[in-house]
Image (cartoon, rainbow, N blue to C red; front, side, top):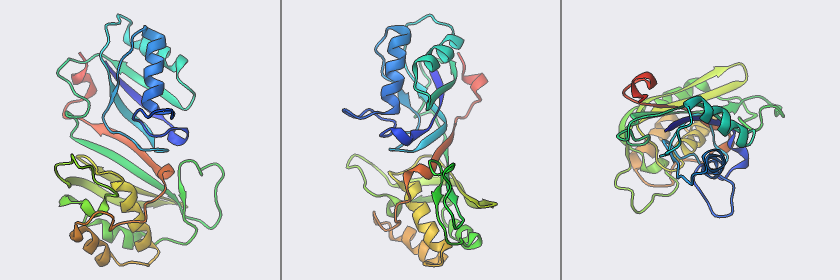
Length: 251
């Protein structure tokens, strides 16, 4: 079974289960137990960190429940807290794997670029009061696309990680009024890669670093070179992409 989930990550210590801490996975598994009576383990296509949001997270689990798909949507939303919701639910073949079958993940990072803060947007956008140079930020983004070793943009690398090479399909910065959005799509991401990229891009936008210096950080291939790490609350998982449409994947 696959769930398409949306959540405000503010009150959670990321997606993955943690002892004595609220997580998205914990809430999802608790709701499934209440709905089906089954203790199941859910798997996410992209594990979001503490306070990171998701518009379309893809989650899967195995179940023997005969409940119709629509009952999973309504039933889980009844048991889930208000800042987590199931948007869709459908059965898939046992061969489908939400993580391995995904071809790319899309993230966006929101920056509120104005002198005053916003009480309405503060949970979802990082406030940068000084004016950002969007053209300079996009020039820096040019070196990100393609296949590169992104070790410099990782905060810490897990010992079991085989490679720090990732393929970025798209990376740019757009401005709409006082809202600046960094958009990036890649096959997968290293730990804190997007937030460290944003931290470095903000330095470029504030003219504290040139696009050429940004490029040299990428070329250094040394963990911890990029940053500072942008706050988590501006980051949101937008979509997980698969080779087939959901209509083709549905069992």
